[in-house]
Image (cartoon, rainbow over the protein chains, first blue to last red):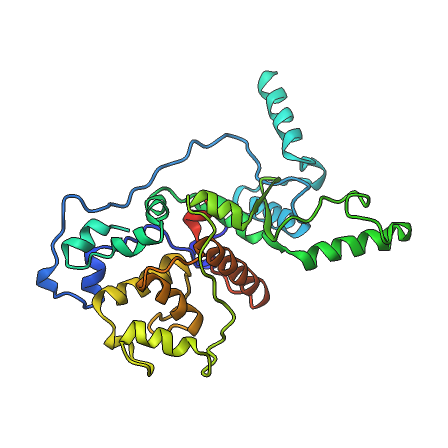
Length: 100
Length: 219
């Protein structure tokens, strides 16, 4: 919903010997990569299917923007009446749908 | 944070963070950041302080004037215990307080806390920090700092009191915080982090600054 560019977030930055080289605190030739160096990795979360991330407890502008974005990306319309009151109601609806 | 790599390259700064009981915090920083959760938290976050609590009471009285003079509990409100950052993720209410930060980083909320100096040139802290940073009473330059101290400042600007832009001209508040680390005098790090989080949140809401600090800590 929000990109790194929009929110100016950054992850995966590691402060190590390479940082010292970039800060010109050590010479380029003195920098050595070690086997023990911390490495960046990505883990994909286990995503739940059909988990709408909004409910009526969210502010109105959040709901409106989510519905607009959902329409732009999928072409599907979500009516405001269909947005669950709270997450507990949503879970019950999902369970009933899966059970049937 | 890779202290082993830094030490291998002649910059052994682990001891500064050991003295502040912050090794657990830096170990935690090497874990996963749940970026979507952080974003959802931040865009809905607001500061709930004494002023916000008073406003809440005032609203209750406006709706029902007979409640005037009653306690918060009598008004049907939760008692105000401490300042919090409140938000919701997927409709679930979540909050962050100084105590929560202290628990997450496994570090007691104790030690010195100095804030609100606002680059005051007459503050006695100027002489103290200049002596620690440059070993002179006058303000020195960034290039005069030792390698270890330059890196301590960088880590402070990235992980402890994160800020955007250049970090080679820290404010007096930031220099005092750095002074505590250089001299191994215990600083109240959870309180510093919490206050900085509140300040950044207010900035992001008032001047529409889209910057999220402490992504990993919020995760």
